[in-house]
Length: 466
Image (tube, rainbow, N blue to C red; front, side):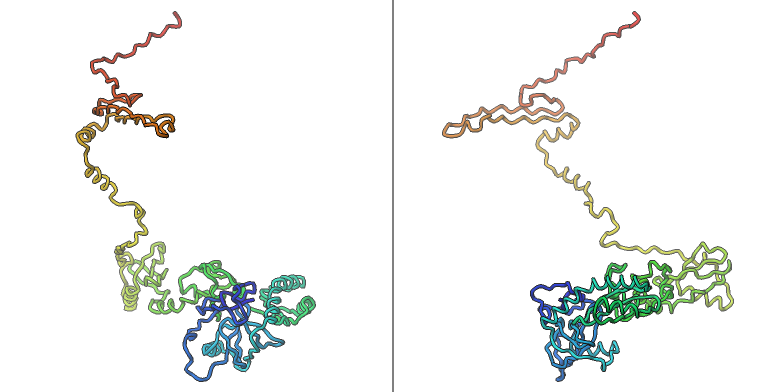
């Protein structure tokens, strides 16, 4: 069953044990609950008028909505599942809006008040079971309908299938480039599905709204979330915004130009009204120059000579207006390269250091190490002598006394034998110490300074010919 919270009309959606025919217990009206939702900003405000509005907006599968009259004064709120009048039989939908805002929606969509039907009751358990069973068959029916249309040879595409709440009617939404004669198709559908058939042709934008998807901006399609009226979009909109006419980039998932091209069109037209015409030409002493590019945001125009169009010169629109006024008086202006003023570089302050690759490294690391060495205390004369003889061999530290092999020998009440203290080796300068195999021996042999080092003599090589 589908309810009014966090769902887009999908019958497979489950809200847990709190879901009833009255809707979910925690239903929000944040405007992001489902497709084409409406934010009820009067939900927490009491109506000062004595008469209560009995009009209710009910939504069905995907983006289909309609308005009904609550003639029986049933207590309804957003998310309530109701059984409404239909032709033939009845239909099941979800309440999407109540109160005074329904009148504003009726006026906005120009919905005829004569065609407003009535609400029978809140959906009971039997209505919900029939509705759920019908919704589960829609995917299989859509695939079968496409096979039948392909077998007949009709150039059409079945986009979506919608069952009525009491399973008495099936509505097929299809798209086609040309007019389709589906009289034979309806006979095939009626014989296959054994119910009343209704065919509705929709445009490619409406198809994208029903199917849904993710746009190139990374968000859900506007037509499937909030956009209701589809305005025509032509290539002039892209030209006004200085966009390249590339159909692959400008087209949406429906194959038409993107609807978002119209969003900033008014701002561009308002800004371009202060620009000189793009067909403006300037008479200079060096020759005629024409406009080759316009920057709407920087309010600049690029000009180039007719003879050499590779060199471009940009000017502010205020300066261009002055140059045009001089040409109208019959005066020729200076060459473009003389009018071009050098661009003053704008000094920017990078507060967050995004472009600095050294922002993760600690600054003044070398200075800190120097300060640490200077502040480090010297241990007697040995430290001073070590600084002067830093290139000498390292002094080996004496090893600790070995422990007994059997650690359990001293366990119990036996007294632990006292170890004789070993004499500490005398500290000698690093220049006179040498590495020995037994560093624990304090009586290490000292090198004799009077001993001469004789070179080893090798025997003469034998002559092989001797």
